[in-house]
Length: 156
Image 1 (cartoon, one colour):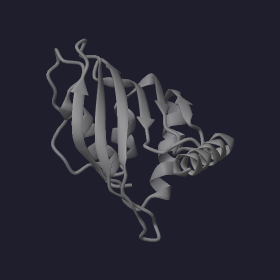
Image 2 (cartoon, one colour):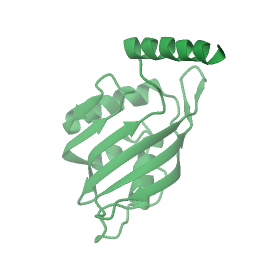
Image 3 (spheres, helix red, strand yellow):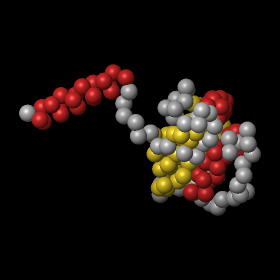
Image 4 (tube, one colour):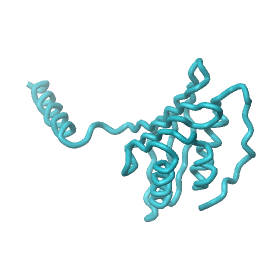
C-alpha cells in the first residue's frame, strides 16, 4: 500500500468535524494507506456501503477487512468533493463526491456518491455510503414491468 502524500493532519480541536477532516480521510483512501485510514475510525465505528461483501461493517476489524478487500479490487480510487453539508451540532456531515475509480483491467468507474459521516473526537463513528442506483432483484424487475405498463398505457 502507498503512504499518504498530503499535508499533516491538523484540525480545529474545538470542531469535531470539518471539510478538512473529510478531505484528509479521502486522501488516505486514495493513497490506499490502510494504516492512516484506520486511524481515522473510532474503535466501535460502523461503515455501511453496498459495494462491499459485508455491507454493514462493525468495529475496526471488520472495517479493516472491508477496506483491504476494496483496495485490492481497485487499481485507483478518486473522490472529488462536490458538496459538503455540515450539521449544526458539528458532529456529522453529508458529503457529495464525484468518484474517479479504476479497475485493475483499466476500466474507469465514475459515478456520484454521497457519504454521511458521524464523528466524535475527530474519529469516524459511523460512515454510510449512498449510491445513485435503483433497487435490485425482484423489486427492480417489478419496477421495470410497472414502468413498461405505464408507458404503454400513456400511449393509448
